[in-house]
Length: 426
Image (cartoon, one colour):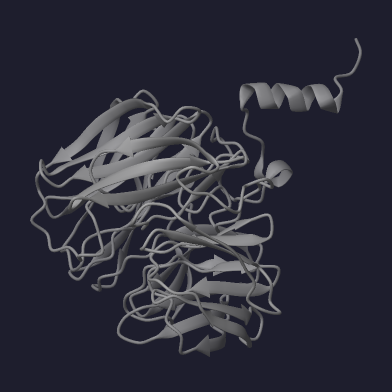
C-alpha cells in the first residue's frame, strides 16, 4: 500500500472540518477534543482568545453598497459578538418588549436564520447600566454544543444547546446581585466550560463538565462587581486562566480552579479581558482608578510597569511585542509591552466598547457610533488606513472566518431601532 501523502491528509481535514491538536494547528490551549478549526471564531475574541485572526484577505473598506456579501436582520438587542463554527453563526439577543432572551443560529453562507431558541423570559428586575444589555455575553461553541450565559431572576444561568437549538442542560452558575448588569463571556477548556460571576455580594468562578453540566470546581471571588471575561493562555510553561478586577490580577489552574498566583493590581471594576505576550499579562480598568498594568505571569508577583491610562470597556491587543488599545473615549495608544514606553497616542474620535481585532497586520475596531477604524499595527506611528460607517451604532466586537468579517450594528429610523448582522468580504 502506498503511504498517504501530506496533501491527501490536508484535503481530508479540510473536507471533514476535523480539529487538530493545538500544537500542530494553532496555539490555543485546552481545545483538544473540540470540533473547531483554525478559521472558526468559536468564542470571545476567536480561537486564540486574543483577537488575532488568521485571515489574510479582508477588505479594508466597505459600506451598505460595497463589499457586503449579505445582511441579516437580528431581532431584539444585544452587545454580544458573533461566534462562528463551521457553517453556523451563533448570536444571543434579548427582546426588551417581551423580556425574553434567545440564542440565534444563522447560516454562514446566506445569513438566513436556521433556528431561534428562547432561553429565559422575565426576571429582568436587576439593575443594569444603560450601556449594557440583557444579551451582552458572547456565547462559546465546542463544535458540538453552544454555551450561553444570561443574567435571569437574580442568578447567572449557563445553558447548553445542541447544534439544532435544543436545550441539553441548564445550570445555575451563581446567585447574582446586579450592580450594572452582566457581560462576562464563558471560556471552554478541555472538557470544561468556565463561567465568572463577580458581583457585589460575593462572586464565583465555576467550571462545569460541558457534556453533562455537572459542576467540576468552584472558586469564591471577592464581593465586588466586575465584568471581565476569563481567558486561558499557555504562559510560563503551563495553562493559566487569568482574570483581572476586584483589586486583583489572579491566575488559576483551569483544570482544578486552584489559585496559581494573585497580587493587588488593576482596579476594582474591569471589563476588558487580559492579554499576553507569552511572558507578561496586561489588563486595564476601570473604576475607581485609571490604571493599565503589566505583570510577569510566573508567580513572582512582579509588576513590571503601570500607566495611569484607563482602557475600560475594550480589551487590548498585543502584536509583535507592542501593546495596542483604544480607550472608551477614542484615544488610540501603543506601548512597548516589555517596559511600558508610550510609543504614540492619537485621538481617533467616537466612543468605544468593542475590542480591536488583528487582521493581516492591521487593527480593526468599531466605535459606538458605527464607524469601524482600520489602522496599522505600527509602533513607529499611528497610521489610519480606512474609516467605514455602517449603521448608526456598533457595540460588539467583530468576528472573522475564512476571509469574511461579521459585524453586528444597529440602525435607527423614525426613532425605531433595529439590529443587523453584516457579512463583509471581497
